[in-house]
Length: 393
Image (cartoon, rainbow, N blue to C red; front, top):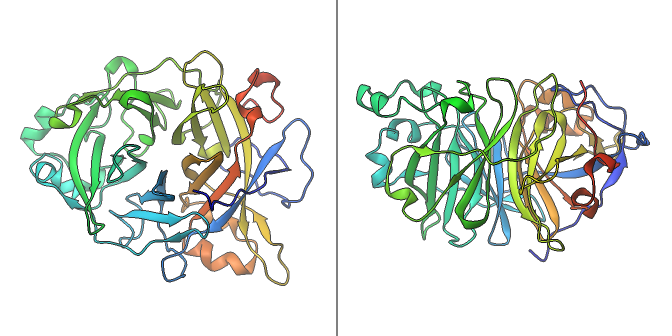
């Protein structure tokens, strides 16, 4: 991705680590020395014709064929759902839309055809690093679809989480650009893992590690804490529709206290200088990037971020600091961290400051953000990192 534009990170005022951040002053304020923050500039996501992309509700972000790709969740405008959205990272412009995803023969014969063929809540996206025509996604809230048939309920009742199980999906891109849902497997949690029954607070982040290990970022468990699970996509994984049992790797996530701190995006990253593997997680409510040691040997770092939307106009600065960004997709390409937001409809209009952006916020338009990775995020003791800070409520 040789034409990627690397945006320079600047330090600005700190954010509070709460689910609904308090309004900010201006993006040019001096940072408090004890809470330095990385500023990240965004570009508005536009359709192929240059118009603003209306209510795409992006979830997940992945690198694909020198471009980026994301997917819309179940709350997006109907025109955006069941689509892979291919993004030119230099302009944040979407490629022309293709037909909505279709069900392959195996998925069509499964217990989950009615849900997947209507308005599935697709969350997170991974482009297969080996096969450029294959992608993976996962479902979250299926309550709008209704219960499974009696036969299917009996077969899939022991999900360890929600009544309608979380579904892992394999997608395949055809020669004409259309997308086919070719395989599906429900996920199974152990009762001892205490995941709980939270249909709209389930898996929202995925990252593909080495040897087919798929990491799954859960928004919250019974205790209200985020978790990271994994499943190994070994040979023959997709040849059955039986439950895929998940495991929980021994990772050191941040020590969280009161409040809601869900994981909403994941990326697997190997540091080129140390060859150390990391999971990069987005804590949407906290405007934080968590740098998690994938070996489990060291505590996670918490990198606070400000997200800036392009504005302009006679009485506006070039960029304005967002009150609520809600990042739900992250990926790394050539040393650049790319992120995309999923407008939180309850809070998104709180961003309106400059008249030039009012229509964009009212349209629930999304932004694509980028910033260079910093070596300090991956080195030494996280407690001594001035760009890292414990969550306090």
